[in-house]
Amino acid sequence: MTATALNILAEDALGTSGIQDWMIDNVLPLLLLTVAILLLWLGAGRGDNAGVMRRVGGIFIALAVIGLAVTGGGVNIGTWLASLFGGG
Image (cartoon, rainbow, N blue to C red):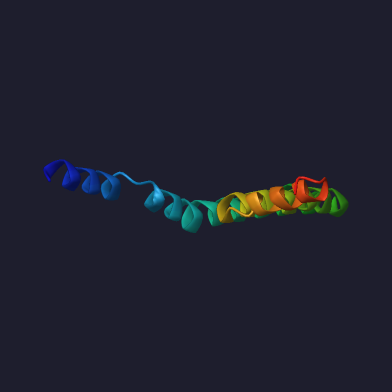
């Protein structure tokens, strides 16, 4: 009985869901804001608007990858791709 109670306590106290939620809610928006400010400061300040837009395209790809990682949608996309090639 005591071992079961300790296991439940350890699972609740040592889980990583709280850290993951905090990073998604706080760190990710801060990083995006930092990247946006750096792009505007470095690129647009010199008049290199085309260079800024190329970098923004790369950022959109990175955001898509982060979105897939956070939501777990990569598994569904992988399954769909496998079905295209006869994975059944």
